Figure 1 (cartoon, rainbow, N blue to C red):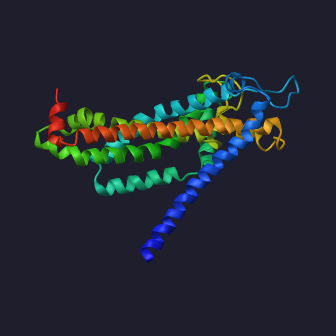
Figure 2 (cartoon, rainbow, N blue to C red; figure 1 turned 90 degrees about the vertical axis):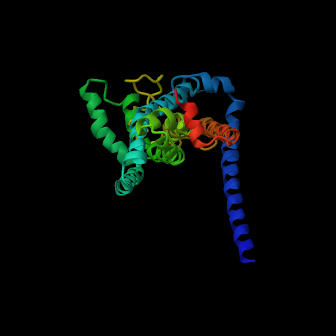
Length: 304
């Protein structure tokens, strides 16, 4: 009886999670839709003119520059972080002893727990000043924000990469050693290629997380509605919403435009998560088709 009650309680909690997600999506859609009675979806997505007050002309709500800036800074941050993350993951999975691994995991968790505003202050004190000394404007630029964001992504990417490589190591390394293959050959030629889909999923997840980051990016990116250039200022969708929502009059066109921008950001994140699901699902089906192969046979097939 108690077991049934416990299962029922867990089911209710799961149902509440689904309900909350549905409520958030429906509410954002409801608040965004009135905008498209005034302007077309094409104009909203492809126009780069954002003029919510209309002081110097007609009101305009185009988020093209914000979309490109969000994607650019997120992808660039992931690309900067991926090499360092993979190197750390290889060390943690294959080289570090248990005691060293525990200490490093604790440091990585601590890095993940630092508030983004603290990262922002450090970024302004170090990265922005460095670019300013190079006479790159005021130092605020897309590259500065990407470098800081890549540091913020490191804990998540290192943890995810390490978990993936440890699983592959437990499955293939003993068989590889039995076949007298060196550890480094096994890592480079077998484990990393086999784990690539899971590593790719982690990279996509990192992009999604970076796209939702607000405070640190806002402090370093310059917050200007310009087409993003590496050493130029720009503004992400998350920064746009954070900066302007407090000033938007409730139920105004500006208010609905900010919710529409939030809807675009949310749909982008949903698309990224769906991509991760399909990548992992495809990999699971591939694993089922190869279930008759032992680890040793797979290693032999992988040999040149």
